[in-house]
Amino acid sequence: MGIIGTVKFAATFAFALPVALYGVNRVSTGHTAGWAFVAIALLMLAAERYITTPFDLPERAAEEAAGAVADDDED
Image (cartoon, rainbow, N blue to C red; front, side, top):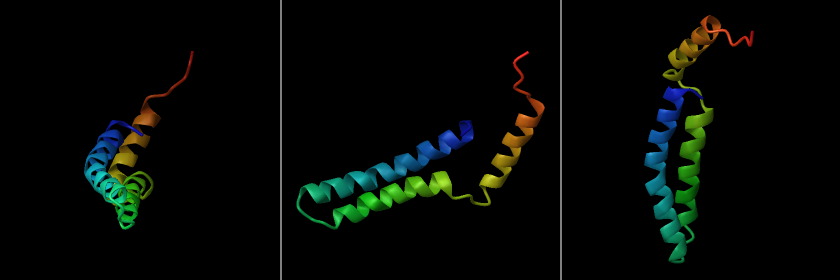
C-alpha cells in the first residue's frame, strides 16, 4: 500500500470509527442491534482495502509504472 492508499485508508477509518463507537455504545447498554453497527464499520474498512473501484485504477497504474522505472536491485 502506497502513500495514497494509506491516506485513503485513514480517511475511511475516520468515517468508520464513529460508527463502530456507536455500535459499541449500543452493545454496552444492552441493545444487540449495536453489533450491526460494528459489522458495518468493519465492512467499510474491508471494502476500502480489498475492493477495486474505477478510481483505484489510475493509482495502481502509477504504482506499476514507478515500479518499472525504479528498479530495486541490490548491486
